[in-house]
View 1 (cartoon, one colour):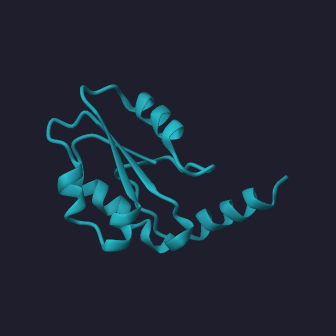
View 2 (view 1 turned 60 degrees about the horizontal axis):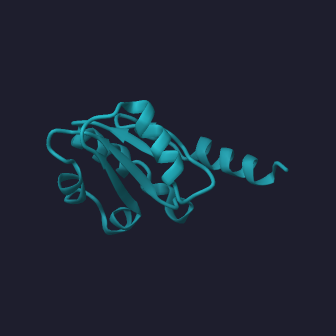
Length: 108
């Protein structure tokens, strides 16, 4: 789940860094917190077909704040696990994410 406002280039980099998760990625849920220019159209032009199929955008208009964006993101997520990211996050390695998924999956 990625919260964003007015930073489509940063958001595109963030989403591109998720692609190595492959089929482990249920969806990349983006909450656009009231960007004056909605980011979805600009974002979709930058996505690979794989990531384009994974991205879902929810837009607030007017802006409601990052806390609201995160709350709505968790409520709307289609996965039992949610990784909160800011739009300027770039995952450099998948090791920490895959280890966390493995730990959660095996913890009763």
